[in-house]
Length: 287
Image (cartoon, rainbow, N blue to C red; front, side, top):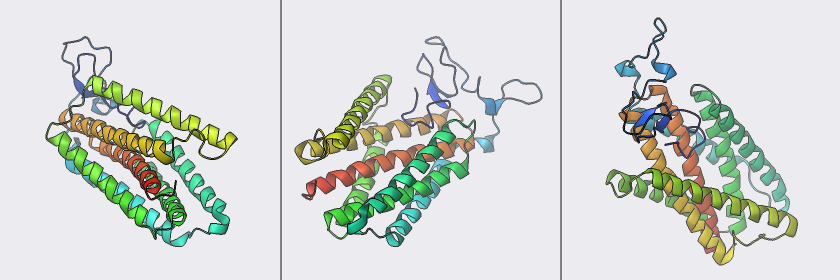
């Protein structure tokens, strides 16, 4: 099973045709045939013989590794977001400048994610760099939204708390077995996400050429509906992320892959926060 996150999609945590989870397991494995998860894992090859070998015990990824790397990534994001909020105030008379800073930071963050996606191994500097620039984007964009809503930052607090609640809720539901990540679940989520993103892209294009909110998917009643759908999709992405991490730990992914898990979880949380922010903004009566 391929991950929902682009950093996992090229290699790494996957499931073969028989449903066996593994790290880098061959996709062409026959159904019902057990495969060695490290059969094609470049990290598990003995340089002397060229033959696959099991990793040393200390080099295997653990939940603690994922938690610590995720905490570092989110910590960098939170620090740069806070600093951007405090040092880059939004001028209502020149809000275009703030939008330019936010868009520029978002583009740099996107490029760093793409570069990491094409790297053979996780590069912590790229991942932390992504977190830093994504934090600048979130800080400036949140300041814009707070100024636009005019509630003194209340909508930002609501979005942060909402994101935390979604994360905690999905984690509890996943650990309790209330959410089961299967091939059907994965296919449904990815199809829904593709349709959602295409609709949002169409709405953006219409808003650029026709003005206003385009097709109306991000304001009013439709905006609330699509905001809720966006949050639900984010929750589904979290479930996929948890499954990928669980498979990686169970089947012995290399310890450094915890950085990819951290990056995947961070991108999903950013998605949920942005949807929450937009949703609470509409509910506040400022759509």
